[in-house]
Image 1 (spheres, one colour):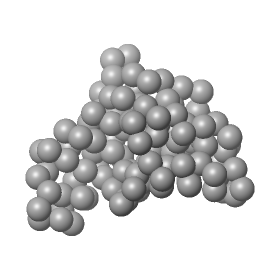
Image 2 (cartoon, rainbow, N blue to C red):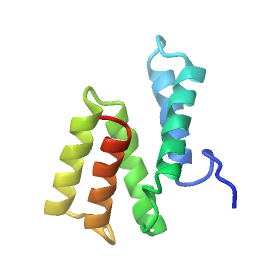
Image 3 (cartoon, rainbow, N blue to C red):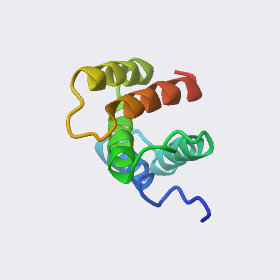
Length: 110
């Protein structure tokens, strides 16, 4: 099946772009969507979500959306990766999700 950045779980990234544009009038919606679409493409092409079940993939992308709009996205992703190992919440494979955050930080050059 061909990749579409608007399909789950990547659709959460597009919703995050819209939320940022809605919350901050200085953010151009098209540019924000382009940046988050590129993030979805990097995740897909980097096979970051491969090996995660649907639940964990959606949870990982949801956390990534929060981290990407933080003051220091790389630090936020690394902190989230550490925290997941200490408190996995309802994840099915917290170790794999934690690794996905670290891979994403490296892939994004953060």
